Image (cartoon, rainbow, N blue to C red; front, side, top):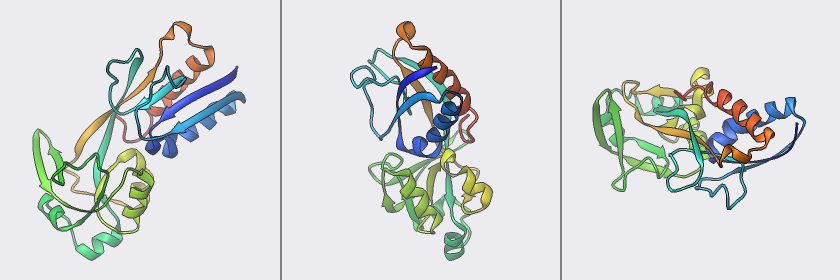
Length: 211
């Protein structure tokens, strides 16, 4: 099997997981060249000549196939260093007094976090100390003790296992985001693309934090 694969994905999952999956596929198919483009925007697969893309919402008004991968979970985390400085965080009301590291997407225009506990929903006003669209900046800031914050589990599973980040307020979570794999019509799909899609779906569904 040979040829070129053009893949588009959000920076967060791309840098954390997708590059590894691509390399595993190339181990089995060394003649396949991959163009892996990571960016936080929507892409027109046909116009920009991509074979497939990962995205966090179902595409509308596009002539593409959307294959649902699962729900991407978000939880609240903080580093041991940060918790040593502020004490235990035992209620959602405590978040109001803490430095919060987050993305612009998660916060409302009024700087509130929407948290869920079962069927209940809570709007918590917070004080962001850092807002960024870069997941690596968020995880580095959280690890260094700059604040607490909501983050995708797929980005911090290793940190949680190692204890460099701690899951706080475990009874609460943010609404999960749906992940989709999108690609143009299968009518003229090349064998290389079809093989990678099947490989990718299996690998993505095994990532901790995707249900």
